[in-house]
Every structure is written in C-alpha cells, then in structure tokens.
Image 1: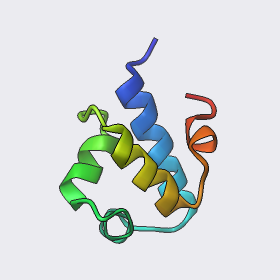
Image 2: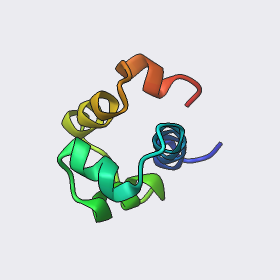
Image 3: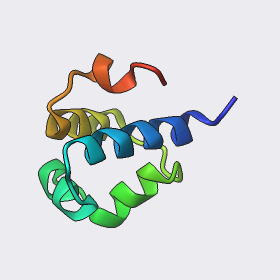
Image 4: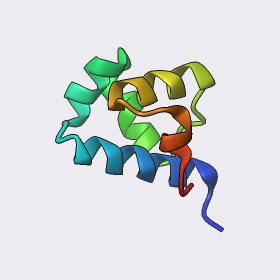
Length: 70
C-alpha cells in the first residue's frame, strides 16, 4: 500500500486543482510556504494536524472530506 503521506499529498493536489488554485495561491490561503505545500503534495512532509486543518479550511472542506478515499 502507498505511504499515507503520498496518498494525502495526492488528495490535496486533487482538491487544489479542482478549485483551480496554483500552489502559490493555495499556500497563501493556507498561510503556509509554497515550498511546504509542494513537499506535502509530493508526499515528502509529515504534516502536523494544525496544518491539515489549515489545508482543509482553505479548500472549503471538512477534515473528513479531505481524508475520504485516503
């Protein structure tokens, strides 16, 4: 099975693309650095819960919606 960090990153990228957001615009909405978002999307980061909440909020999703299918 694929690493949870990779699966989470793919889910974030998918949702970001659905919203039509660039990584930079998305990072601004999350109040996180663009390179950090890139690392998340590539599955290189073990994301803190606080940042997962920021990501879900910026996407307009509940946490459960973001994790659905992961």
